Image 1 (cartoon, rainbow, N blue to C red):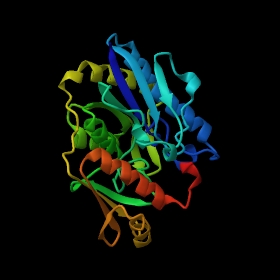
Image 2: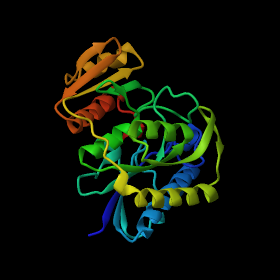
Image 3: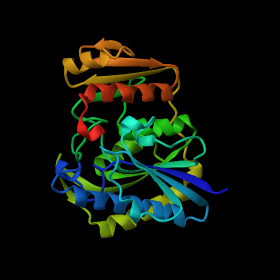
Image 4: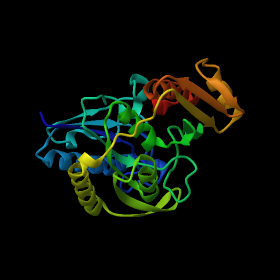
Length: 284
């Protein structure tokens, strides 16, 4: 049996993406944004499948409505998980388990509050100021790499803007192969590489990551786990606390205390989704 590779996809860190108009259905530039994102992901998947050791790739669309990827563009040898987080258990890592041998992250962005980053945020930008796991600040790359680590799966590759790549190497490990596809000049502007360049760089990065896979260790978070969420406002923290599954640990902060990381991150997303309602359309 060959290697099984899991690919988690976000959108803000994809080639060509700089603005909210590219990110959500109904926005003026969303159709082109989907094309940009799909090209990045297909480049990563195609490179993985070109490795003789790889037998299967699973892709999880993890942005917004989570129905962004153009399925018809994907090659045989992979499957793609589409559909909103409200119908998933593991959000951006749905479909991941201990049968996989490596995890990769395409289109990722830096965490909330990062200077010199394109569209930085953590999970839901309108709600979350900061996430801390056992006292360490996590962005989405670390959140998902640690979820892979819970299953013993190492994170080996990430593409995104330069800030996301720096963050991921610092949080996940120096072994991580990163491919920066743009450099921020402001939170909604960047110096961009065209797809003709980034597709080749992503392919080479994935091939390098697979070649170096033996030296990659899973990012493990030991239990018990304190998963703290700091909100932008007191009102948001109060709404989160009313769910009754966490402890209020600050004016704008709640903490979920769980025996292991998997239990903590599952409940944390549900709390965030609850707090971000009342039923935002993009979560459906």
